[in-house]
Each structure stands twice: as structure tokens, then as C-alpha cells.
Image 1 (tube, rainbow, N blue to C red):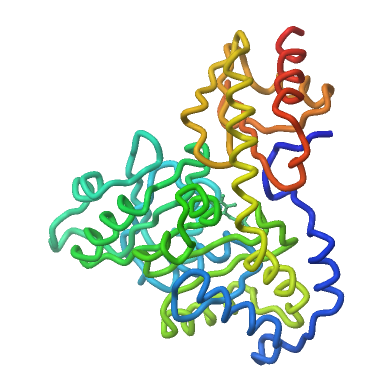
Image 2 (cartoon, rainbow, N blue to C red):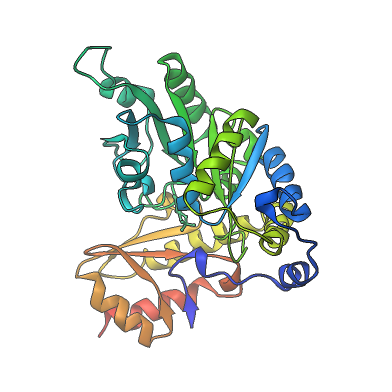
Length: 339
Ligand SMILES: *Cc1c(COP(=O)(O)O)cnc(C)c1O
């Protein structure tokens, strides 16, 4: 089976399993897990912030981030297709009691102009505009990258308007590698940044949230509130340290495979797939027919993938399919589409 459903399916590497078995641990709620403490120190440097916090999931990282920035009733600007809005069970409303405000974009990339158009002047009727959330890479937009210059311009504009900036960098490592930048450079404009270790970076569990020390101290309480205070979490942090230290550069390989797959699929009849839109490790494939039956047939052909719309299939490359050739993927599609 070739599993292209998501980069979350990556299994921990052998090196991770060894590190997990040998990890020095303690009770992290007491601040006594040396491996968690080390991960949090290294993650802060990695993301270019003063401090960082290990959280079990990206969703918890994002929700703690919003909660830590906002007061009840505050307005939170989100790109209309953002994970924070689409896939987190209404968390902004339920956990922060804040008001999400969607901003439509063409390709997932918020701009200062679009944000400016959504902002309203202070008025007795209006709630307080508090936060803008940016997603990089953008999941529903097919792994699109927001370039550093564009992110920096958006962040400066937001800051000038008195807003905070949260970066949902679940796949920030992909965005950084695609631009030849460090994650710290890619996150520079953000007040807070969340990055998943459990996707293309292969850790079994774990994400990190980073920001100023004062912010992370408050976020630590938010994590506890949500039930994310873990005990001997050093076994997880040990894997996460390997993600941070050694698994970022190889993402370039995932990007090359995604591009090659798109180039092959673009040749097939009944398929629209533009390789120019493949910026990282995702390929969006638009079909001339409903996607669900094609996904089922592809599974019989040995290829697992998911839908991203009624006629759209999403493929995600990752370390555990690194040996796959683009031609094999195209062959499975050709077979499925001829049935
Ligand atoms: C996966 C993802 C998350 C959430 O991460 P989980 O660990 O699955 O909770 C948040 N944002 C984006 C953009 C994602 O792709």
C-alpha cells in the first residue's frame, strides 16, 4: 500500500524509537522532565522565540495560542479556509469565547489589503479586534507557501493596527525548506507560532507552541486547563528532538516527489493537476467525476488518498513513501480512472 492520505501517517523512525526507550524522564507538570525541558529550549531557538511549550497536538497548540491572546468577545481574523476555523470543532468560539471572522482569499494567502478591508474602526458597537491567524503552509489551499516577505508585510501591518499575529505553522518546516529559510526566519513576524512534530517530521505525538516567555508562561496554564499537562512526556519529547535536529532538510525530498507526481498526473485524461501549484508536499487533483468512488478504486489499486472536495483528491508525500516513484502513482490513477 502507498499511503498518501497525510504526512501524519509517518511512523517514528528507528532512531526515534531508540531515543524514546532511553529517554530520561520526570513529571513534567512539576517541570521535572529533563527531556521535555530540553525539547522546549531547543524548540524556542528553532522557532526564534524566547520560550516554547510541548503540546500533544497541533489543535491544542492553536487553541491554547488563541486563548492566551484573547479575551472573551474579541475578534479573531482567520483566512476562510484555515484549519483553525474548519477543523477544530469551533474551538475559537467554544474555548476562547472569541468571535472568528473569516477573510476570503484566492489561494489561502492573507494580505495586508484583505485584512485592512476586514478591519473596522473603534466604535461602541464593535468588538475588539485582537488577533490574526495565518496558516503556513496552507493545508486546504494545497500546501501553499506564504513567502517570508509577504508574511512580514502582513505581520507589520497587523501590529501597526494593534493586532497580535498567530502563525499556524503545522507545516512551517515545509514552508521554510521550500524557501531555503530557517523556521526562525519564517516565523519572525509572529507573536506566537505552533509547529507540528507529528506530521512530515515523523514524531509519533507532539507539537510545539512558541512565543515570549511571559506568553508561554500563560499558555502553560491554558494547556493545563485543556488537560494537556502530561507527566513523563519525555518519551515523546525524545522523538521530537530528533524531528527538530535532523528531519527538516529531508522534506525537500517530499517536495520533489509531490512535484513529480503532479507532473505525471497532469498528463492523464479526466484530471486537472497543475504542477506549478505544488509548492511543498501536497498535490491537489481535480477530477471530471465525483472523487469518493475514485478514492475507493484507488485503494484497490494499492493507493490510499483522501478527498479535499466533491471532485478533488488530495495526495500528501512524506518520509514513509520516499521510495515510491511518481510513475507508480500515475499508474494507479490511470487504472482507477479507466474503470
Ligand atoms: C494538522 C494541522 C493542525 C492540527 O494538528 P493536529 O496535531 O492534527 O491536531 C493545525 N493546523 C494545520 C494547518 C494542520 O494541517
